[in-house]
Amino acid sequence: MEVGGLRSIKTYLLGLTVLSVMACIVLQFVGLESGTIWRGLRQGRNGLSMTHLQGRDLSTRSTAANASIACTPHDNVAFIKVYKCGSSTLQSFFLRYAHQHDLIPALPSRGDRPIIGCGAVIQEHNVLQLPGDPKWNVFAHHFTFNKTVFDRFMHPEVRFVAILRNPIARLNSVFDYFNMWQYFTNMTEKRPDGQPPVMTYLQDPSGWDKAFVGRQSRCYAGRCVKNCMAKDLGYNSLDSATEFVSKVDKQFSMILILEHLNHSLVLLKRKMCWSMNDIIYYLGKKQRERKGNTTVPITDEMKARYRASSPVDHELYDHFNRSLWRQIQLEGRDFFEELGHFQKVLDDIFVFCHGRKEKGQNVTIPASKWNEPIVISGHTCTVLTWLRHNWDMIIRRRLIKRFGKAEG
Image 1 (cartoon, rainbow, N blue to C red):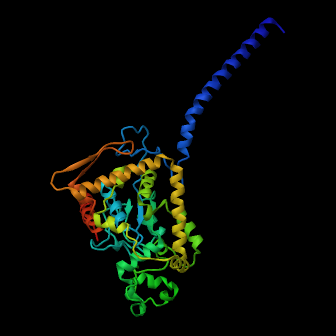
Image 2 (image 1 turned 180 degrees about the horizontal axis):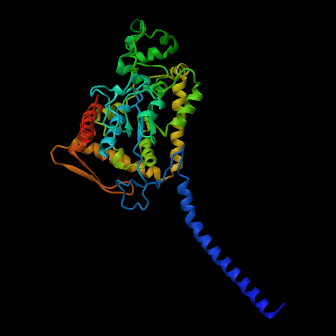
Image 3 (image 1 turned 90 degrees about the vertical axis):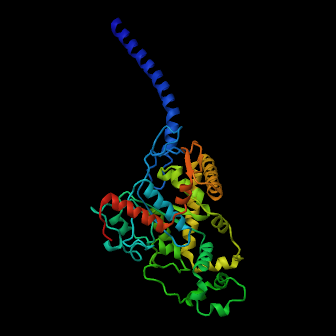
């Protein structure tokens, strides 16, 4: 081989060596960075496309000072209001979100109706009809879940959210709220003096179910004692409990758990890319006291009987309670740091709203890695106590002003 050819080969090999060294350096650098990127990509769960960074409020509406990456808040949500699961508090919560962000929520045709439609059916005349028939962004009224109906009326990117409660605690609440003893034949006569009616029922749930004589409204099935949460989520007896739970798991983006409400809301905030201001709520002193009230001495035997009598609700609750904690575990340690901060924010709101004496007072919750500054005024305290009928009136007025004359 000629000398010129050897020189060319040496030059070529030297070039390859230099390129290899440079490639190693680049790959090492990218590897350090991509570890962070990959960990971020792994945060998406349950089919949700999430771009949030753990532990930071990245709402493009209210971005925390130290957040460097923004995600887009998800504004299309249907909250299924499950009876006696703390759902009235959450109903107001979602309606407030719709109003504060100028969204279009579903409203009943009549302003005084707590439900929309009848059972699992919604017809045009059941709702406030706006010019142009815009799709709903938010749904938060009583309605038995029916995805076909939501596909018709709601924005196509809707996410479904619901709340569940320990079935025994829910049953106790139903008996207390609806005075359920009056809907069971001879329960008054057979109940020992001083015994809470719910305990009488739990001594023989299957037997008392046969003695139930309460007339249920065709559209409003609140007086329910058996598999009631499942029924609100669309359960029918053709599905086994396992099949139904699997169906709910696929259709719903998130199921909140009342016993772990603050955990649920922080997780919801992260999944929906909302701000901390979006998830604050206020419980008055009496509500706080009732929240921890478990005075009825229900035995393990009673719980076992009720589990056998209402198996779908129990499987539903057990599954999504476990699911909540699995998702929280995936969020990492900073989830509990944010949770602690959120609980302190709620405590500060309670102290201010419960104790304020003078008009014009306000308190500012400082900015943190989780939130922008949140100003709490006397008006804020009032807004946080508004219920469904308050929001219906206010939102109806806003929508009519925005769209013009509405029907219904």
